[in-house]
Amino acid sequence: MDYKKIIVDSWIYTQSNKKLIIWFGFIPSILTTTVGIGYIAYQIFAFKKSYIFGDEESSALGEVVTFMWEFVNSHLTWTVPLIIIAVIFGVFYFLFPTLARAASLQMIARHRNGQEASIGTGLKYGIMAFLQLFEYHMIIKTFSFFSLLIEMSFVVRNLGPVLFKLLLPVFMIMIIISFVLMLLFTYTDFFIVIDGKGVFDSMKSSAKLVVLSWKHTFLITILMILIGVRIFIQAIMVFAIPALIIAVTGYLATVTLPATGIIVGGVVGLVCLFLASYLNGVIDIFSYTVWTYTFLDLTSEKHLSAREAITD
Image (cartoon, rainbow, N blue to C red; front, side, top):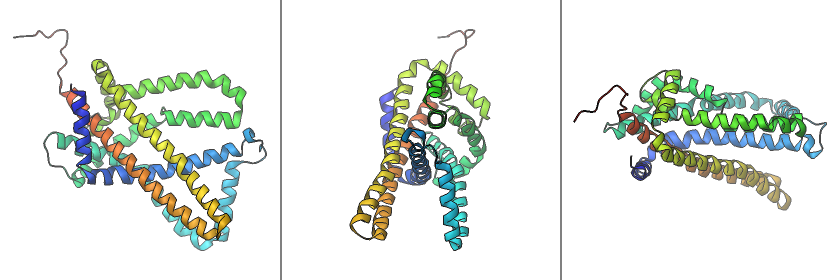
């Protein structure tokens, strides 16, 4: 397998398919980045209100609920429209990123095999694999590295450093297990979307393919690094955007009208959000392409059993 060719071809394909980036990279990334910003902002606020900073009597969740209740009481006419917007956003957030991933894999695989595939084609076949892929993502999300970090932060914030130190070996073991499982299930998405297999059959097939293709560990390592870079970039953006908004808004509010500071801070935040989402979208599509090409190449290879004889 020519690793360099796969990566170069994947980058060329990514750059030549802007519609794929916009529809199945940029748009879902806006959803996930926005939620990530909100979640990280809440974590920062929760840590600030925890015993770590000496404010043990207040509750971050309680203050958030109180703020929302007071806002609703003060702006009754906004309540229904905001609820509708929140519900629509929530539905898109939970469903569209998974659908976009399924549609992307379909388009990339069909193009690699010489088929004509448009955005509509990707959506059509992506919908057929959506439920299985959504089910798999719900199962595997429990073992994700991000979920473990959230659990660790909860323990530190609410149960104290002593108990956290006691549980740290358990968390480290869970992180190692998470890494192994993610590695074994590398190709599960592709067996579900491209081959149309069930969730557990795909997980088993993925683990078998990873074991049989141990010579390609170097490529898998590179791909894991690519995913790590994507997560690192997203993490920087998630931290930077709210910090930038707060800094700009706070500064302008001290030197000019508060309303001006809020408007400028909002515009800066939106620009940063769109830039971060587009960058993440490009990296997502590039990663999907590399993985898809690798999957198609590996599954096209024939693995001989011990009973088969090689004939000239």
